[in-house]
Length: 103
Image 1 (cartoon, rainbow, N blue to C red):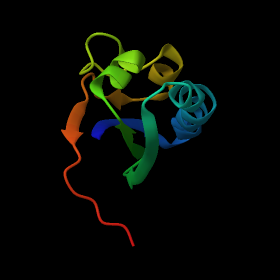
Image 2: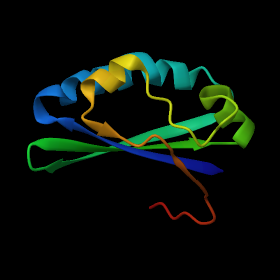
Image 3: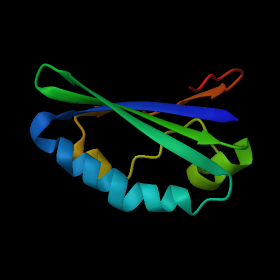
């Protein structure tokens, strides 16, 4: 399994705009991709901003390319998301999941 991690920040007053984009636009798109496993959305308050960490899990790199295109390391940040965000990573990080413990 491949874990894809991306971070961004929004001003507190714009955070709901990004949440809406993620849940109403991006998540349905992810769910439609064969090989998409799941996602986690982490948030924390940093001064007057909300930091987002988006973690997606994928079966294969080909599944990620179906979402991100040929350059799988480049972040997919659509114009609506860009408008809501103050800062975002242009590149993502991929990790191979080697161990996991759930209770």
